[in-house]
Image 1 (cartoon, one colour):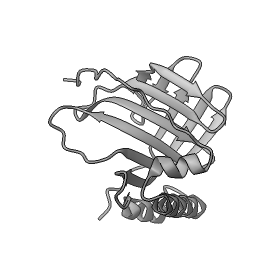
Image 2: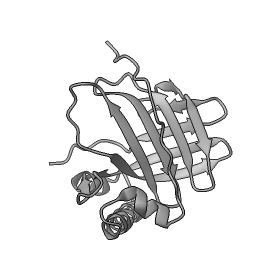
Image 3: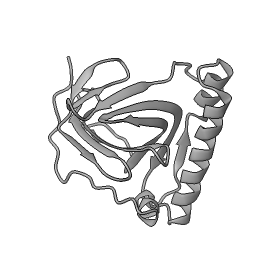
Image 4: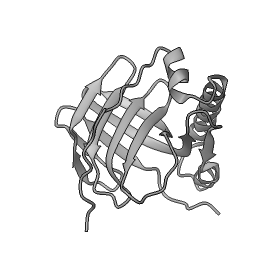
Length: 178
């Protein structure tokens, strides 16, 4: 049975360099970079499993591409973690709504699709509309097909669409919260 929870929302305020996370915490952002195709964010994270987060919001694709910089001893196998999302931009404020489905990419391996059960449960419970669920499914299918057709390489798929994501060469993990 899916873990039923309300839609997770975030705000990325590029003027104040603040990311309001899904729990309402204000997180200071180290870097915001806006491009013609999206917004890059890099910030520390006091999460117990990871200490730094890099994200690209890609509104036209309905995706958020992430690299979680995990702490020593955390065994996660992923190059990129994609959230299927609804992203609206109003000036310097980017509003993000997670549409439940996640894609885990390890370059050269078939992409994993997660949380379709959560999408179904949220739709049934009225937490998202049928139109939003349809958008999430269409987005998921397009991403899976595109990545698969590019030899299971998510970045190659994005480059083929004119989207060149850049990532930090070095990050410093912040301590975990007590």
